[in-house]
Length: 205
View 1 (spheres, rainbow, N blue to C red):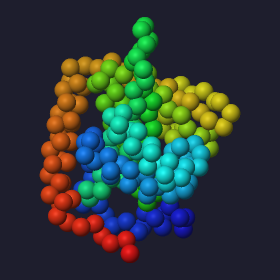
View 2 (cartoon, rainbow, N blue to C red):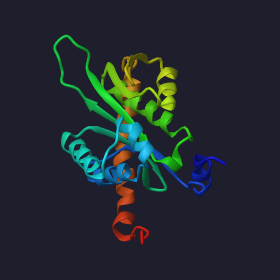
View 3 (cartoon, rainbow, N blue to C red):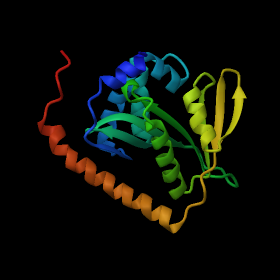
View 4 (cartoon, one colour):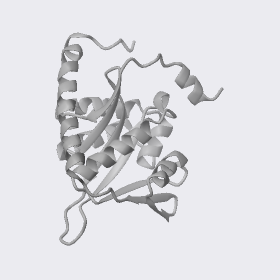
């Protein structure tokens, strides 16, 4: 049995799963998610070795810049994210953004990354992003497969691959659906807040 199979077997069946936008008050959860990534997952996400202080600084920048973060929640805990970082607007150029993904090891191999990518593409479409850039290591076969399945144009640069995705133009229906999801995200976060406040997290000791 592989390590990933052992990790999967260690997880009890999930009672509730959801993918939604993170609220500003939840960026501490985002930082905690990054810190829970195992060394290989960190390496694949950031294309290199990353220390815990560097992860905390990255999370702080994401919060300060108000980047878009979609989270995969399992039983109320953040276990995977999709990030969208808007790039500076240039006259005559399509609205662009950089995107990135991370999923904690016990939840990998369950299609969560694909679900996060599809939801992020839907968000980008509704908000009129026309060019999404994705950079990952050439050895990251899982990310490459996800990009190819969504018709990304791939360019090899040494040990890295740059993928470019062009979301379909938005429609009134796609915009309305994303607006409804944003409202739902606020409602779900608010409903979870009493539990976060009054129920302590399991002890790590």
